Image (tube, rainbow, N blue to C red; front, side, top):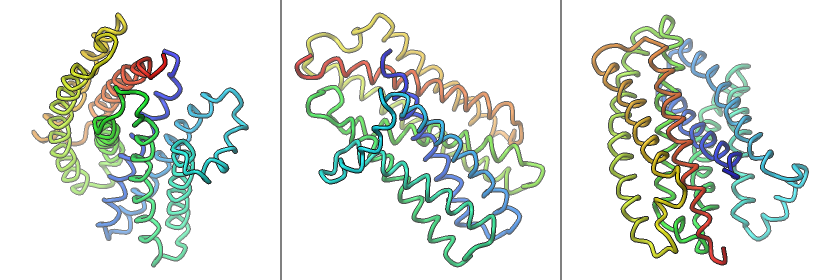
Length: 282
C-alpha cells in the first residue's frame, strides 16, 4: 500500500474534526466552570491527533520543505493547497481557543473563536473530500467520497469523545453519564447510516464502467471490506449497547471501541486509495 501516509492523514484528520465538534458542542451549551475547564483540557488531545495527522501528510512528501509551495497554489485555489491551509487554520483556531480559555483571555470572544473553529473543521472535511473528487478517477468521482469522509469524522469522533469523558467520569458525575448515553444514541444512528451507505456505495462501485471488477482488484480487497464492516459493527455496536443499558463509566470498553473503529476506517481507506489505479491513463 503506497499511500499509507495519506491513509493515516485523512482518517486521523477527519476523526480529529469529529472529536472536536463533539467537545465544542458540549462547551457551547455548558455553563458550569469546572466542566468547561475539563472539556477545554481535552482539546489538547485534538491538537495531538491533528499533529500526528499533519506529520503523516508531511511524510508523504519527498521533500517536506516544499510544503511551503502551498501558498502559491492558493492563487489558483488548488484543492491540495486549500486542504493544507484549512488544516493549518483549523489547528490554529483550536489552539487559540484553548489558550484563551486556559488563561481567561477575552472571555466574551471565546465562544466566537470556538464557533469559528467548528466552521473551519467542517470546511476541512469538505476540503479533504474535494481533493479526491476527481473526474480522472471514476471510482472517486461521486458524492460517495464526501459521504465516506464525513462519516469517518463521526465514526471515530463519537467513541473517542466518550472515551475522554469516561476518563473524567469521577469529576463530571451525572453530566458524563447523560452525555455518554446521548453519544451512544448518536453512535447507533451513525452505525446505521454507515452500514447502509457503505453497502449502497459498494453497489454503486460495482456499476461503474471500469477495466476490472474493483472489488477484486487486489487479493486482499474482499478481506478489507469484510474487516471494515465487521470491526465497525463490533466497535460501535458493543459500546452503544453497553452505554444504552447503563454501563457508562468503563474506560476500557470505550478505548476498545475507539481502537476498533479507527482500525475499521483505516481498512476502508486503504481500499479507497487502491482505487486510484483506475485513473485515466493508468
